[in-house]
Amino acid sequence: MSKLVAQLKRHEGVKKFCYLCPAGFETIGVGRNISQNNGLGLSDDEIDYLLENDIKRCKQELIALPWFVDLDPVRQDAIVNLCFNLGMTRLLGFKNALAAMEARDYSKAADEFYDSRWAKQVGSRADEVCEMIRTGRYGEGYA
Image 1: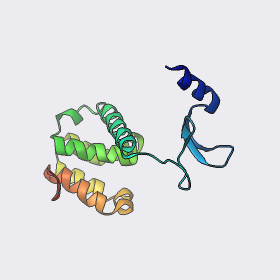
Image 2: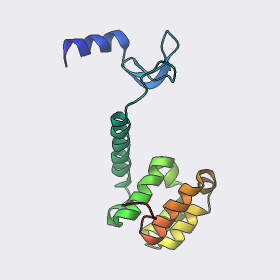
Image 3: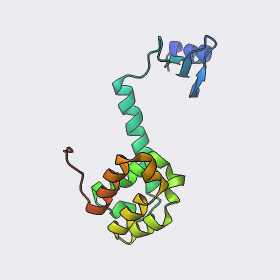
C-alpha cells in the first residue's frame, strides 16, 4: 500500500456503509462523495465490479444447497437472482419452493415462488424468474 493510500485512509477513515461526512454529503469507502449533488457517484466499471462481487457471494452461499450445483445454468441464474434480491436468509424461507427445486419439480417450484408476497412486490421480475425456473430458458431478448 502506498504512503498516500495509507495517509488518505487515516485522514478520511474507511467506512463500509454510507454515512454523512462533516460537510453533510453522503459518503462511502475512503471519502467517496456519492451524493447526487456534487458527488462522484459510481462509475459504470465500479457498478459492474460490485455486481460481479455480489453475484459471486450469492453463488458461494448457494453452494450450501447440495442440489444447486446440479441445476442447469439458467435455473442456477434464476436462483442466484432470487438470492441477490431476497438475501440468502429470506430465500431459505421459501421451503416448499426449494424442496420442489431439489425434487426437480420445476413447475411446482415456479408456482411456489410466484404465489408469494415477493412476486407481488417485484412484478415482472417474478414473471421472468419463475419462467426461467419452469422452462430452463431465458425469455426473449437475452443472448
